[in-house]
Image (cartoon, rainbow, N blue to C red; front, side, top):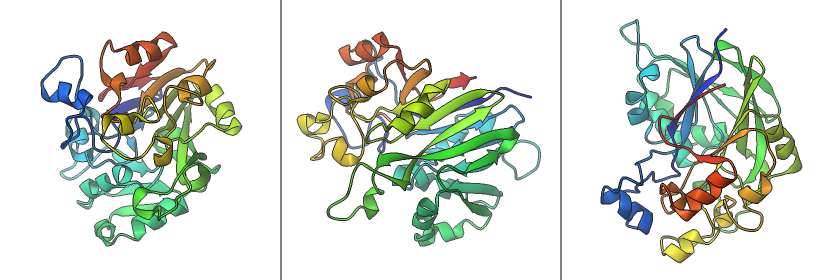
Length: 299
């Protein structure tokens, strides 16, 4: 049996990096071709146990380009075929589901998601074009099997409803099936992927403590980052994302784990994207890595 392998298809938050309409200090470096920063597409990973079949975790708007840039996901064999066996959603934000439309050309695959995320997809008539997509609802805590004998389980993470569903007074740190993480295990190896988290509960800590690799929400370095940069009017916590640094941030909340820890879903304003920046040095000094597109993780 093969080893559990994950490929980072995209490592940026919604809008990618550099964001198409942004000249914040970090994006400006990218537009200028500064070698200290590298372009990143919107967050998602692909996982396999070595049998040639792959499962995508989330389907970003950049999925078509991500597939073309990842040799393991190229079609092989039959005239119309794909090694992509399934997609699992951790939520129904635009940057998690829009890429499903890139998979609409009649090759079968299974979409796994919570009932809440399935309902959000079903409510959009465009996804009615996905005739070859089988839909399977999975409740948080329910174990299910993916291609190659990978065991998966979704678990609730403090967060909020997708932006287009949140309403006037959203609750931003509620545990619900609308925002989940995923734990993947195979041959004793465990990987946990949490692209959006407003906080870390004791149940999450216990789950992360037994993981070998944790890919965790690195959206903003500081809670007020977008306010200070003039790029937005919301704090990170208002958007459902705990900051990396500061009181109650992920550096503080996730100390002491044995797992390889990697930040993913990184906003274009986050100075952690800059090689050698004080922010990058700070996270690396305590054992964290910053995900890059194409990063391969073998457990």
